[in-house]
Image 1 (cartoon, helix red, strand yellow):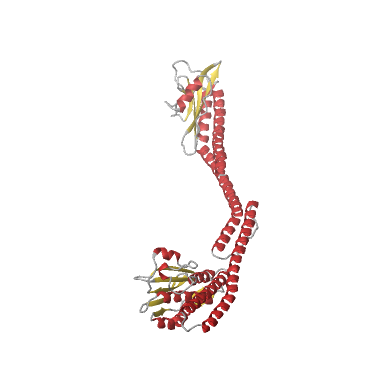
Image 2 (spheres, rainbow, N blue to C red):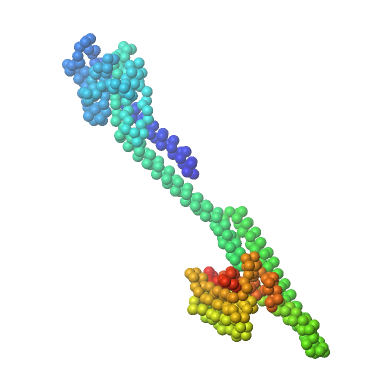
Length: 456
């Protein structure tokens, strides 16, 4: 639109300037024609005589030129072929020695009016020179020359340009307004689609795009996106349901199997190693099934967020796990000042239990586990740092994956699902969990929960 306006506005501005100058030139041509008609009746001077004021017609011509100069400020004169003034106003003005005035005078001596002067622009201080021949009996006997100032003409051109510029600016603003409305109408569905995609990526799988407004192609895209989101949610729901159902269905026969193992143990000598091994593996399998069921429920359940004192909750968990730590000879300490954040208290408690249990599990006797609560701007954090062997860089990237356990800790009791459950519980409420080294040795787990109230 800007290119179109410039393509139209620049020629229009040039045309307006040319029209304004042409009007002035035409007026000067009319004036020179009138003065040439008067000059035709001025009697020729005798050869070698001086110009004097005795000739009545010459006086009339001089009076006309004087009034013309006084009223319009335009210098004018009638000059014979010898460049002597028959009449001029002001008296000190003669044919210029060079420039446009000289060229116009010479051209008029050839019996034709001078060419139109070059265009004078508002930023120039040029003058307009027009010359017309005085012809009598077919011969050029003199030349009428006018030299006009251009201040008024340049001001008129400038005012016209300002009107054109104002019109172009108004048209451009109107075009920008229309473009903003049009792009807003086109991009509104895209913004909604982007926000919904972000919601789904962060775990809010029930988010959908409202199919309203926008071009038909984007409305079809919104409907297709909703269909895709429905299918993805159905697939994930089927996966969760399968895990939950499988875990639930396997628990009953496993419980019956463990009961039969216990009954069989009564028939065998006390301390039989095979029966003890079978019983241990059966209990481990039961724990894995329980963890799978907890993970399926954690991924499916929606968080019940409330403004929670994170420090008080963390202190409660530290107190609950202190007996376990003392029985293992591990020091469990807590620095839990009051700090509030938005979280699901039950889910956060379960996540902290899993993290503290994991820290106590891998911390050897004589070492310590520290729980520290703090707030940092928009989030509150609970840091659990242990004094265990820690993990390498590659292992830190995999911790929290389902069923993953460090190759060096395969002999430690566990299913490899505890931290996965913690992550699922925290992410459902907008929280997060991260892992890092704890110097000089050990693992540092940071649980983060938002302090701002979540959007409805």
